[in-house]
Length: 442
Image 1 (cartoon, rainbow, N blue to C red):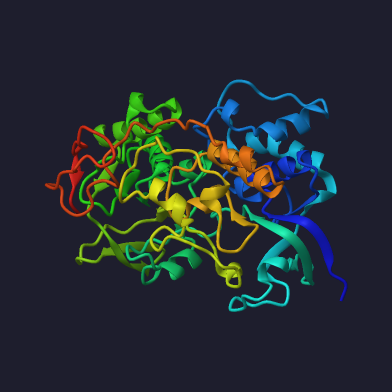
Image 2: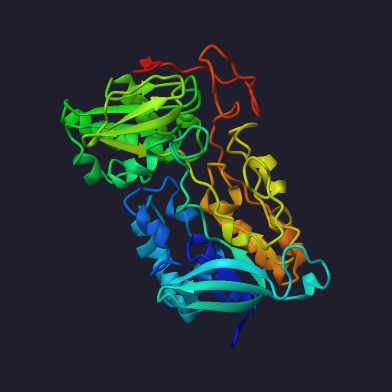
Protein backbone atom coordinates (compact mmCIF):
# COMPACT_ATOMS: atom_id res chain seq x y z
CA UNK A 1 0.00 0.00 0.00
CA UNK A 2 1.34 3.42 -0.97
CA UNK A 3 1.93 5.72 2.00
CA UNK A 4 1.77 9.49 1.69
CA UNK A 5 4.76 11.41 3.02
CA UNK A 6 4.45 14.86 4.59
CA UNK A 7 7.03 16.89 6.51
CA UNK A 8 4.68 17.80 9.38
CA UNK A 9 1.24 16.47 10.24
CA UNK A 10 -0.98 18.69 12.37
CA UNK A 11 -3.90 17.01 14.12
CA UNK A 12 -6.93 19.28 14.31
CA UNK A 13 -8.08 22.27 12.21
CA UNK A 14 -9.03 24.42 15.18
CA UNK A 15 -7.49 27.78 16.13
CA UNK A 16 -4.11 26.33 17.13
CA UNK A 17 -3.92 23.69 14.41
CA UNK A 18 -4.57 26.24 11.66
CA UNK A 19 -2.12 28.67 13.26
CA UNK A 20 0.53 25.93 13.35
CA UNK A 21 0.01 25.37 9.62
CA UNK A 22 0.44 29.09 8.91
CA UNK A 23 3.70 29.20 10.88
CA UNK A 24 4.97 26.05 9.15
CA UNK A 25 4.29 27.57 5.73
CA UNK A 26 6.07 30.76 6.75
CA UNK A 27 9.07 28.65 7.77
CA UNK A 28 9.15 26.87 4.42
CA UNK A 29 7.66 23.58 5.63
CA UNK A 30 4.65 21.93 4.02
CA UNK A 31 2.00 20.95 6.60
CA UNK A 32 -0.93 18.60 6.36
CA UNK A 33 -3.77 19.38 8.76
CA UNK A 34 -6.06 16.46 9.55
CA UNK A 35 -9.53 17.38 10.81
CA UNK A 36 -12.11 14.83 11.89
CA UNK A 37 -15.01 17.20 11.25
CA UNK A 38 -16.46 18.27 7.92
CA UNK A 39 -15.29 21.88 8.20
CA UNK A 40 -12.73 24.10 9.92
CA UNK A 41 -12.92 24.47 13.71
CA UNK A 42 -15.73 21.93 13.93
CA UNK A 43 -15.45 21.85 17.73
CA UNK A 44 -15.77 25.65 17.94
CA UNK A 45 -18.86 25.39 15.75
CA UNK A 46 -20.52 23.25 18.42
CA UNK A 47 -20.24 26.11 20.92
CA UNK A 48 -20.71 28.78 18.29
CA UNK A 49 -23.47 30.45 20.35
CA UNK A 50 -21.06 31.23 23.21
CA UNK A 51 -19.38 34.65 23.32
CA UNK A 52 -15.65 34.60 24.00
CA UNK A 53 -14.26 36.74 26.80
CA UNK A 54 -11.09 37.43 24.79
CA UNK A 55 -11.32 40.39 22.39
CA UNK A 56 -10.71 40.09 18.65
CA UNK A 57 -7.19 41.51 19.08
CA UNK A 58 -6.22 38.39 21.08
CA UNK A 59 -7.93 35.86 18.83
CA UNK A 60 -5.85 36.18 15.66
CA UNK A 61 -2.44 34.53 15.34
CA UNK A 62 0.42 36.61 13.86
CA UNK A 63 1.50 34.27 11.03
CA UNK A 64 -2.14 33.58 10.19
CA UNK A 65 -2.78 37.30 9.96
CA UNK A 66 0.13 37.74 7.55
CA UNK A 67 -1.09 34.86 5.38
CA UNK A 68 -4.66 36.19 5.32
CA UNK A 69 -3.66 39.75 4.54
CA UNK A 70 -2.19 38.49 1.27
CA UNK A 71 -5.74 37.53 0.27
CA UNK A 72 -7.16 40.99 1.03
CA UNK A 73 -8.64 39.90 4.35
CA UNK A 74 -8.82 42.40 7.18
CA UNK A 75 -9.24 41.67 10.87
CA UNK A 76 -11.97 42.93 13.12
CA UNK A 77 -10.27 45.26 15.57
CA UNK A 78 -12.81 45.56 18.37
CA UNK A 79 -15.47 43.54 20.14
CA UNK A 80 -15.90 40.06 21.54
CA UNK A 81 -17.04 37.51 18.95
CA UNK A 82 -19.10 34.41 19.48
CA UNK A 83 -17.58 31.11 18.42
CA UNK A 84 -19.57 31.29 15.17
CA UNK A 85 -18.30 34.79 14.46
CA UNK A 86 -14.74 33.67 15.17
CA UNK A 87 -15.10 30.99 12.53
CA UNK A 88 -16.77 33.23 9.97
CA UNK A 89 -14.46 36.18 10.44
CA UNK A 90 -11.14 34.40 10.84
CA UNK A 91 -10.88 30.61 11.08
CA UNK A 92 -12.83 29.71 7.92
CA UNK A 93 -10.91 32.26 5.77
CA UNK A 94 -7.66 30.93 7.23
CA UNK A 95 -8.58 27.34 6.37
CA UNK A 96 -9.51 28.48 2.86
CA UNK A 97 -6.16 30.22 2.48
CA UNK A 98 -4.41 26.98 3.48
CA UNK A 99 -6.38 25.17 0.79
CA UNK A 100 -5.75 21.47 0.22
CA UNK A 101 -3.31 21.41 3.12
CA UNK A 102 -6.39 20.98 5.33
CA UNK A 103 -8.08 17.62 4.94
CA UNK A 104 -11.54 17.11 6.47
CA UNK A 105 -13.31 13.92 7.47
CA UNK A 106 -9.97 12.48 8.58
CA UNK A 107 -9.91 11.23 12.16
CA UNK A 108 -6.52 10.26 13.55
CA UNK A 109 -6.82 6.91 15.31
CA UNK A 110 -3.15 6.19 15.96
CA UNK A 111 0.34 7.70 15.90
CA UNK A 112 3.58 5.72 16.13
CA UNK A 113 7.09 5.33 14.74
CA UNK A 114 7.53 3.40 11.53
CA UNK A 115 8.52 -0.17 12.35
CA UNK A 116 8.94 0.61 16.06
CA UNK A 117 6.39 -0.03 18.76
CA UNK A 118 6.55 1.76 22.11
CA UNK A 119 9.15 -0.59 23.55
CA UNK A 120 11.80 -0.27 20.84
CA UNK A 121 14.76 2.11 21.33
CA UNK A 122 17.05 1.16 18.43
CA UNK A 123 16.91 3.74 15.64
CA UNK A 124 13.64 5.11 16.95
CA UNK A 125 14.35 8.83 16.56
CA UNK A 126 15.51 8.33 12.96
CA UNK A 127 12.26 6.70 11.89
CA UNK A 128 9.36 8.81 10.54
CA UNK A 129 6.05 8.94 12.33
CA UNK A 130 3.22 6.85 10.97
CA UNK A 131 -0.19 8.49 11.37
CA UNK A 132 -3.19 6.19 11.05
CA UNK A 133 -6.38 7.80 9.77
CA UNK A 134 -9.99 6.69 9.57
CA UNK A 135 -11.74 8.61 6.81
CA UNK A 136 -15.38 9.61 6.81
CA UNK A 137 -16.06 7.02 4.08
CA UNK A 138 -14.81 4.28 6.41
CA UNK A 139 -11.51 3.76 4.57
CA UNK A 140 -8.23 3.58 6.50
CA UNK A 141 -5.09 5.44 5.55
CA UNK A 142 -1.46 5.76 6.68
CA UNK A 143 0.66 8.88 6.38
CA UNK A 144 4.36 9.35 7.11
CA UNK A 145 5.56 12.53 8.79
CA UNK A 146 8.85 13.86 10.10
CA UNK A 147 7.03 15.61 12.95
CA UNK A 148 3.57 15.62 14.52
CA UNK A 149 1.79 18.49 16.26
CA UNK A 150 -1.30 17.38 18.16
CA UNK A 151 -3.75 20.29 18.35
CA UNK A 152 -6.86 18.13 18.63
CA UNK A 153 -8.20 19.89 21.72
CA UNK A 154 -10.41 18.43 24.44
CA UNK A 155 -13.94 19.42 23.41
CA UNK A 156 -15.12 15.93 22.57
CA UNK A 157 -13.93 14.42 25.83
CA UNK A 158 -15.90 16.30 28.49
CA UNK A 159 -15.53 15.32 32.13
CA UNK A 160 -18.55 13.51 33.58
CA UNK A 161 -20.96 14.44 36.35
CA UNK A 162 -19.53 11.80 38.67
CA UNK A 163 -17.41 13.41 41.38
CA UNK A 164 -14.82 10.63 41.21
CA UNK A 165 -14.02 11.47 37.60
CA UNK A 166 -16.03 8.54 36.29
CA UNK A 167 -19.58 8.74 34.92
CA UNK A 168 -22.11 8.68 37.73
CA UNK A 169 -24.38 5.66 37.90
CA UNK A 170 -27.20 6.35 35.47
CA UNK A 171 -25.38 9.20 33.69
CA UNK A 172 -25.32 7.38 30.35
CA UNK A 173 -29.03 6.60 30.67
CA UNK A 174 -29.73 10.28 31.38
CA UNK A 175 -27.84 11.28 28.23
CA UNK A 176 -29.71 8.72 26.14
CA UNK A 177 -33.01 10.01 27.54
CA UNK A 178 -32.15 13.55 26.47
CA UNK A 179 -32.12 14.75 30.08
CA UNK A 180 -28.39 15.47 30.43
CA UNK A 181 -26.03 17.43 28.20
CA UNK A 182 -22.31 18.17 28.50
CA UNK A 183 -22.71 21.26 26.32
CA UNK A 184 -23.65 24.76 27.48
CA UNK A 185 -27.14 25.52 26.15
CA UNK A 186 -27.66 28.42 23.78
CA UNK A 187 -29.93 31.26 24.87
CA UNK A 188 -32.72 29.87 22.71
CA UNK A 189 -32.25 26.44 24.29
CA UNK A 190 -32.22 28.04 27.74
CA UNK A 191 -35.44 29.94 26.93
CA UNK A 192 -37.11 26.65 25.99
CA UNK A 193 -36.51 25.46 29.57
CA UNK A 194 -38.86 28.08 31.02
CA UNK A 195 -41.03 26.59 33.74
CA UNK A 196 -38.64 23.67 34.22
CA UNK A 197 -36.11 22.72 36.89
CA UNK A 198 -32.58 22.87 35.50
CA UNK A 199 -29.49 21.66 37.35
CA UNK A 200 -26.05 22.99 36.38
CA UNK A 201 -23.01 21.09 37.68
CA UNK A 202 -19.62 22.81 37.57
CA UNK A 203 -17.63 25.77 38.84
CA UNK A 204 -15.87 27.12 35.74
CA UNK A 205 -16.59 29.63 33.01
CA UNK A 206 -18.93 27.31 31.10
CA UNK A 207 -21.04 26.82 34.20
CA UNK A 208 -21.10 30.57 34.85
CA UNK A 209 -22.20 31.17 31.25
CA UNK A 210 -25.07 28.72 31.62
CA UNK A 211 -26.08 30.24 34.97
CA UNK A 212 -26.13 33.75 33.51
CA UNK A 213 -28.36 32.73 30.61
CA UNK A 214 -30.70 30.64 32.76
CA UNK A 215 -31.03 33.46 35.31
CA UNK A 216 -32.50 35.63 32.54
CA UNK A 217 -35.09 32.90 31.93
CA UNK A 218 -36.00 32.92 35.62
CA UNK A 219 -36.45 36.72 35.56
CA UNK A 220 -39.00 36.29 32.76
CA UNK A 221 -40.71 33.21 34.17
CA UNK A 222 -40.68 32.82 37.95
CA UNK A 223 -41.88 29.20 37.67
CA UNK A 224 -38.43 28.28 36.35
CA UNK A 225 -36.02 26.87 38.90
CA UNK A 226 -32.23 26.66 38.54
CA UNK A 227 -29.96 24.72 40.91
CA UNK A 228 -26.21 25.32 40.68
CA UNK A 229 -24.28 22.36 42.07
CA UNK A 230 -20.72 22.76 43.35
CA UNK A 231 -18.56 19.89 44.57
CA UNK A 232 -16.56 22.16 46.85
CA UNK A 233 -17.78 23.17 50.28
CA UNK A 234 -17.99 26.91 49.55
CA UNK A 235 -18.10 29.21 46.53
CA UNK A 236 -14.52 30.40 47.03
CA UNK A 237 -13.20 31.70 43.72
CA UNK A 238 -16.17 30.50 41.64
CA UNK A 239 -17.35 34.05 40.95
CA UNK A 240 -13.94 35.23 39.73
CA UNK A 241 -12.30 38.53 40.56
CA UNK A 242 -14.62 40.99 38.86
CA UNK A 243 -12.85 44.26 38.08
CA UNK A 244 -9.49 42.77 39.16
CA UNK A 245 -9.54 40.40 36.18
CA UNK A 246 -7.38 41.74 33.36
CA UNK A 247 -9.88 40.29 30.88
CA UNK A 248 -12.94 42.46 31.68
CA UNK A 249 -15.47 40.14 30.04
CA UNK A 250 -14.11 37.17 31.97
CA UNK A 251 -14.48 39.12 35.20
CA UNK A 252 -17.99 40.23 34.27
CA UNK A 253 -19.04 36.64 33.54
CA UNK A 254 -18.49 35.59 37.13
CA UNK A 255 -20.14 38.70 38.50
CA UNK A 256 -23.30 38.03 36.48
CA UNK A 257 -23.46 34.57 38.01
CA UNK A 258 -22.86 36.05 41.47
CA UNK A 259 -25.74 38.49 41.03
CA UNK A 260 -28.01 35.62 39.96
CA UNK A 261 -27.31 33.94 43.31
CA UNK A 262 -27.63 37.17 45.30
CA UNK A 263 -30.95 37.97 43.64
CA UNK A 264 -32.36 34.57 44.49
CA UNK A 265 -32.67 33.50 40.86
CA UNK A 266 -30.39 30.52 41.39
CA UNK A 267 -30.14 28.06 44.28
CA UNK A 268 -26.48 27.37 45.06
CA UNK A 269 -25.91 23.84 46.38
CA UNK A 270 -22.44 23.25 47.83
CA UNK A 271 -20.47 20.18 48.82
CA UNK A 272 -22.62 18.02 46.54
CA UNK A 273 -20.59 15.27 44.85
CA UNK A 274 -22.76 13.39 42.42
CA UNK A 275 -22.74 9.60 42.68
CA UNK A 276 -25.94 8.58 40.91
CA UNK A 277 -28.62 9.89 38.57
CA UNK A 278 -32.04 8.30 38.86
CA UNK A 279 -34.09 8.60 35.67
CA UNK A 280 -37.83 8.28 36.21
CA UNK A 281 -40.81 9.43 34.17
CA UNK A 282 -38.91 11.95 32.06
CA UNK A 283 -37.04 13.57 34.95
CA UNK A 284 -33.77 12.90 36.74
CA UNK A 285 -32.84 12.96 40.43
CA UNK A 286 -29.23 13.64 41.42
CA UNK A 287 -27.94 11.67 44.40
CA UNK A 288 -24.78 12.74 46.24
CA UNK A 289 -22.14 10.50 47.77
CA UNK A 290 -23.48 11.45 51.23
CA UNK A 291 -27.02 10.37 50.30
CA UNK A 292 -28.52 13.82 49.69
CA UNK A 293 -30.92 14.14 46.78
CA UNK A 294 -31.95 17.09 44.67
CA UNK A 295 -35.52 17.63 43.60
CA UNK A 296 -36.32 16.01 40.21
CA UNK A 297 -34.83 17.96 37.32
CA UNK A 298 -36.07 18.33 33.76
CA UNK A 299 -32.56 18.97 32.45
CA UNK A 300 -29.02 18.59 33.78
CA UNK A 301 -26.14 20.60 32.31
CA UNK A 302 -22.76 19.10 33.17
CA UNK A 303 -20.02 21.74 32.89
CA UNK A 304 -17.24 20.00 34.79
CA UNK A 305 -14.44 20.68 32.33
CA UNK A 306 -12.67 18.59 29.74
CA UNK A 307 -9.84 16.10 29.54
CA UNK A 308 -7.37 15.11 26.81
CA UNK A 309 -7.88 12.04 24.67
CA UNK A 310 -4.53 10.24 24.61
CA UNK A 311 -5.95 6.89 23.48
CA UNK A 312 -4.60 7.29 19.94
CA UNK A 313 -1.14 8.16 21.31
CA UNK A 314 -0.55 4.81 23.01
CA UNK A 315 2.54 4.17 20.84
CA UNK A 316 4.05 7.62 21.45
CA UNK A 317 6.40 8.18 24.37
CA UNK A 318 4.74 10.88 26.44
CA UNK A 319 5.81 12.67 29.61
CA UNK A 320 2.53 13.68 31.22
CA UNK A 321 1.77 14.87 34.73
CA UNK A 322 -0.03 12.20 36.74
CA UNK A 323 -2.77 14.59 37.89
CA UNK A 324 -3.41 16.94 34.98
CA UNK A 325 -2.33 14.81 31.98
CA UNK A 326 -0.42 17.88 30.78
CA UNK A 327 3.29 17.92 29.84
CA UNK A 328 5.22 17.72 33.10
CA UNK A 329 7.15 20.98 32.63
CA UNK A 330 3.91 22.85 31.97
CA UNK A 331 1.85 21.20 34.71
CA UNK A 332 3.59 22.96 37.59
CA UNK A 333 2.56 26.31 36.08
CA UNK A 334 -1.13 25.54 35.65
CA UNK A 335 -2.00 23.09 38.45
CA UNK A 336 -5.25 24.39 40.03
CA UNK A 337 -4.36 22.48 43.22
CA UNK A 338 -1.48 24.90 43.67
CA UNK A 339 -2.85 28.19 42.39
CA UNK A 340 -5.48 29.74 40.18
CA UNK A 341 -3.63 32.90 39.27
CA UNK A 342 -3.79 34.08 35.69
CA UNK A 343 -0.17 35.15 35.83
CA UNK A 344 1.00 31.90 34.27
CA UNK A 345 4.06 32.36 32.09
CA UNK A 346 3.75 31.62 28.41
CA UNK A 347 5.04 28.21 27.37
CA UNK A 348 7.11 27.17 24.41
CA UNK A 349 8.72 24.17 22.76
CA UNK A 350 10.95 23.26 25.70
CA UNK A 351 7.97 23.03 28.04
CA UNK A 352 5.91 21.06 25.53
CA UNK A 353 8.57 18.52 24.51
CA UNK A 354 8.12 14.80 25.14
CA UNK A 355 10.58 11.88 25.13
CA UNK A 356 9.40 11.28 21.56
CA UNK A 357 11.48 13.70 19.45
CA UNK A 358 9.54 16.04 17.13
CA UNK A 359 6.19 15.31 18.77
CA UNK A 360 4.28 18.11 20.51
CA UNK A 361 0.86 18.58 22.09
CA UNK A 362 -0.32 22.19 21.82
CA UNK A 363 -3.47 24.19 22.46
CA UNK A 364 -6.12 23.34 25.04
CA UNK A 365 -4.98 19.71 25.04
CA UNK A 366 -1.57 20.78 26.34
CA UNK A 367 -3.30 22.00 29.53
CA UNK A 368 -4.68 18.51 30.13
CA UNK A 369 -7.45 18.80 32.70
CA UNK A 370 -6.47 22.29 33.85
CA UNK A 371 -8.81 25.21 33.06
CA UNK A 372 -8.18 28.83 31.96
CA UNK A 373 -6.49 28.13 28.62
CA UNK A 374 -6.39 31.19 26.35
CA UNK A 375 -6.03 31.42 22.57
CA UNK A 376 -3.02 33.71 23.12
CA UNK A 377 -1.29 30.87 24.93
CA UNK A 378 -1.83 28.49 22.04
CA UNK A 379 -0.63 30.94 19.42
CA UNK A 380 2.63 31.45 21.27
CA UNK A 381 3.00 27.71 21.75
CA UNK A 382 2.75 26.94 18.03
CA UNK A 383 5.08 29.81 17.12
CA UNK A 384 7.74 28.40 19.43
CA UNK A 385 7.21 24.76 18.43
CA UNK A 386 7.43 25.52 14.71
CA UNK A 387 10.58 27.59 15.27
CA UNK A 388 12.11 24.60 17.07
CA UNK A 389 11.15 22.23 14.24
CA UNK A 390 12.71 24.67 11.78
CA UNK A 391 15.97 24.61 13.72
CA UNK A 392 15.65 28.19 14.97
CA UNK A 393 16.36 27.36 18.59
CA UNK A 394 16.86 30.98 19.61
CA UNK A 395 13.40 31.99 18.40
CA UNK A 396 11.90 28.89 19.98
CA UNK A 397 13.40 29.76 23.36
CA UNK A 398 12.29 33.40 23.22
CA UNK A 399 8.85 33.16 24.82
CA UNK A 400 7.88 36.59 26.09
CA UNK A 401 4.10 36.73 25.94
CA UNK A 402 2.49 38.25 29.05
CA UNK A 403 -0.85 36.64 29.77
CA UNK A 404 -3.74 38.55 31.38
CA UNK A 405 -4.14 37.85 35.10
CA UNK A 406 -7.42 36.44 36.41
CA UNK A 407 -7.05 38.43 39.60
CA UNK A 408 -7.99 35.30 41.56
CA UNK A 409 -5.54 33.74 43.99
CA UNK A 410 -5.39 30.98 46.52
CA UNK A 411 -5.51 27.64 44.74
CA UNK A 412 -8.51 25.72 43.52
CA UNK A 413 -10.78 27.01 46.23
CA UNK A 414 -12.33 25.58 49.35
CA UNK A 415 -13.18 21.98 48.55
CA UNK A 416 -14.34 20.17 51.66
CA UNK A 417 -15.73 22.36 54.43
CA UNK A 418 -16.95 25.97 54.36
CA UNK A 419 -15.05 26.77 57.56
CA UNK A 420 -11.71 25.99 55.93
CA UNK A 421 -9.51 28.90 54.99
CA UNK A 422 -7.07 29.24 52.16
CA UNK A 423 -3.37 29.64 52.66
CA UNK A 424 -3.21 32.23 49.96
CA UNK A 425 -1.65 29.90 47.42
CA UNK A 426 0.33 31.76 44.81
CA UNK A 427 -0.72 35.23 45.85
CA UNK A 428 -1.54 37.28 48.92
CA UNK A 429 -3.71 38.06 50.76
CA UNK A 430 -5.49 34.76 51.36
CA UNK A 431 -8.72 34.10 49.50
CA UNK A 432 -11.91 35.15 51.27
CA UNK A 433 -14.87 32.84 51.69
CA UNK A 434 -17.96 34.00 49.78
CA UNK A 435 -21.26 32.57 50.98
CA UNK A 436 -24.34 34.18 49.48
CA UNK A 437 -27.73 32.63 49.96
CA UNK A 438 -26.26 29.15 49.84
CA UNK A 439 -27.84 25.87 50.76
CA UNK A 440 -25.78 22.89 51.81
CA UNK A 441 -28.22 20.56 50.09
CA UNK A 442 -31.73 20.16 48.78
